[in-house]
Amino acid sequence: MKRFIERLQDVWRQHDSLVCVGLDPEPDRFPALIASGAAPIFEFNRAIIDATADLVCAYKPQFAHYAAVGAEEQLARTIEYIRQHYPAVQVVLDVKRGDIGSTAERYATEAFVRYGADAATVNPYLGTDSLEPFLRYEDRGVIVLCRTSNPGGRELQELKAPDVPLYQQVATLAAQRWNSRGNCLLVVGATHPAELAQVRALVGAMPLLVPGVGAQGGDVAQAVKNGQSADGTGLLISSSRAILYASQGADFASAARAATATLRAQINQHRTPAR
Image (cartoon, rainbow, N blue to C red; front, side, top):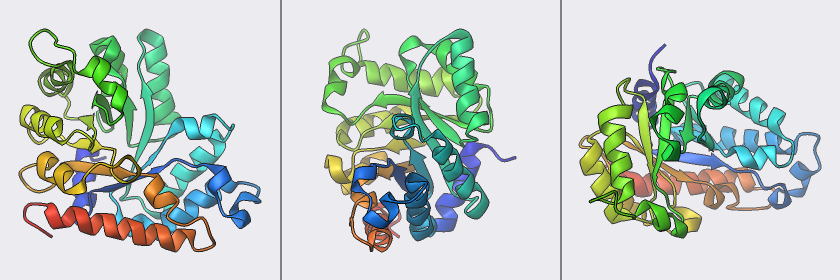
């Protein structure tokens, strides 16, 4: 089996897309016909996936949106549906796990065995031994929080450690220590374009998951220009609400497709070379 980075490179080329759609279901925003069904989250996700799969490189289900409403089975069905119908598209399970010892091993098993995700997000605050159980899955991606898109991220991530901000230390550790198996990525928010450029300079071609465009207001052009790798790839630019809820009517799937196509075109306009 190819490694995650290789599979990601394949779908970047096949779909000419750096778009990652966040599957963050909010049932109170579903159209009435979907909301009244027996498995509304799965049915909503399936409609979004069918409408957008040829336009994206990845889907990113956020675990809490499923666990909070007891919908883990619908999450598993969603991932299996992508596997069966759109196998080139990668699945990033957004869990932000961070623990040690046997607990970290269980979390890695949950992400990569129970749910069969291609990649998972992790929190590096507990250090290398908290990441190692994930990194051992050499064919899967391990996406480390680095400079997150939320305003409160600066409270810790910009602290000097000791001479550079903590997020730069995380980036350096990722590039020099954690990526020995070639399966490490970083999360860097589009709301911090200058920091995105700094991280890119530190990590070379390592792929970056970039949330924060769309509803959070990150600038697409700046994210691409500052974050792309030398070949015009290297990014998974994630948007959730702006795509999922482009319409709350019966046309929600076609509206999601239009929003995804628009985002892909905006991204490709600023890639080097421009698409």
